[in-house]
Every structure is written in C-alpha cells, then in structure tokens.
Image 1 (cartoon, rainbow, N blue to C red):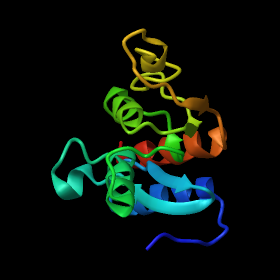
Image 2: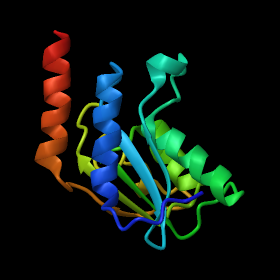
Image 3: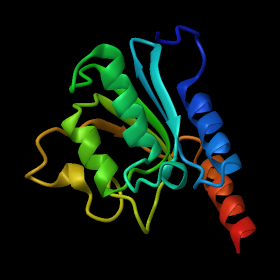
Length: 151
C-alpha cells in the first residue's frame, strides 16, 4: 500500500541511505513518488543480496512497478541521494520516470551530469527532467564519512 504521508521524499531517501550505511552498504537511498504519494523507497542492498544490480534506484523502481502493476512509471518522480550510475540511469529512462532529483554528483560513477551523460545521448529514448545538487553537501558528507570509516 502506498505511503500517503506528506513527508519530504528527499528526507526519506536520506533515511534509506543511512539505513544502508548501518547495514554496511554504500549509503545511497531512493524514493519513487507519484502525485505526492510515496510508491517505493529503498537503500542499496548489493552486499546483502549478493546482487550487483541491487542499487537503491533499481530496487525502488522494481517496488514501484510492482505497486502500480506496470513496467512504466509514467508520471512518477525519483528522488535519490547520489547521481545515478549508467545502469540506474538507463533503468530510469526505460521506466519513463518523469523527474529525477538527486543529491551529490558522482564524478567517478555518475551517468547523468558526469561520465557518459546518458540522457544527452541521441540513442536515449526518454530523458527525465533532471534536478541535481539537492542537499548536495549532506549527501557528499554521508558518503565521505562512510568511506573514511572503511579505510
């Protein structure tokens, strides 16, 4: 059942990112909304599930698709704490996400404003509206702290 609370989707994404860090996963969280209703929320689970595709975005997209019983998330928005990688950016396009909101840019692994810039490619069939840099310093600090603790 969708969560109909008026919570800030980016705040929920940060909750998911912190929960991922507590599990020892890279702290990335994602939330899918439609019409102000939260359809799905997830954090990274690649280690837990032993699945390289279990990124927060991929899990949230899967849950949202199941929730609305469609492979297309028309009219849905995705809020994520880190710029999506190439795999996630492609899945976002295939799902027809309307708007992508993300926190920190990812110069090494991002595919939206960095790296391959998938949505600028002429072969990309659907480009969501993109809004990056939301709570960027908070997102970057969460990642920085996580990786400092691992070294």
